[in-house]
Image (cartoon, rainbow, N blue to C red):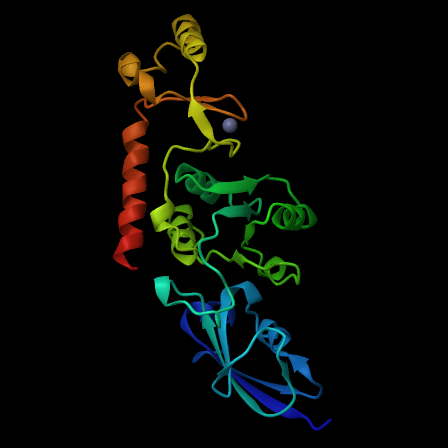
Length: 262
Ligand SMILES: [Zn+2]
C-alpha cells in the first residue's frame, strides 16, 4: 500500500490533549496501512469520548471510518448545542449517571450535592471502574486519559481543571445537566437517595444531641423539622443546620456560572 498523509485539525478545547507541539491544533500523520479514524485521533492524544463530530473531506463519519489515502480531517469537541444536535454527533448529552475515578472525590461530592448519581470508591482500580461503568450504564469521569481511551468506554469526560468547583461546572455543561439539578436529594457519603427521616430517627438524633453532640446541632433545628432527611443507604441523617446556607450559596454559584457561559 502506498503511504499517505492525514492532516487533522482539532477544534475548540480539544487542543488541551495535543501537548505543546501543536500550537495551531493541526497534526499530520503519515500512514502506511489502512487505519481507523478513531485510532488516528487517539494517536494524537485525544480520547474518543471527547470527540463529537468528525468531518473527512467535508463529510461526517463515524469512529469506524477507515483512512486509506491523503485526507483532511476536522475533529470537533462536544459543545452544548441544546436542541440543535443532530444524529451525526457521536456523543450524547443528558447522561445523569456517572462513575468517577479515585482522584475525583471532591468532584463526586459536588455532583452528589446537586443530586447526580455518582458511583465512587477511592481505591477502585481501572478494571473495577470499567466494570461499574458497563454494568450500570454510567459515563466515566477520569483524569486518566489512557483509561478514557479504552475501547469499552462509550461516554466519558476528562475534567480539564484540577479544581473541584471548576470540574463541577465543566461536567454540568458537558452533559447539559443544568435543568436537572436537584440539590439535597442524594447522600454525599454513599450516593443513595435521601428520604424524609422517620420521627423515631429525629427523636434519636435529638437525644444524641443532648447526650454528647450538643453544640453540633443548632438550637433552631426543630424549626426545620420537615427538612430532616435520612439516607436510604447509610442511614446518615441530614438536616438544614448552620452549614445549609453555605451549601445553598455554592449551588447558586454553580447555577449562575453554568448559565453565564451557556
Ligand atoms: Zn448515605
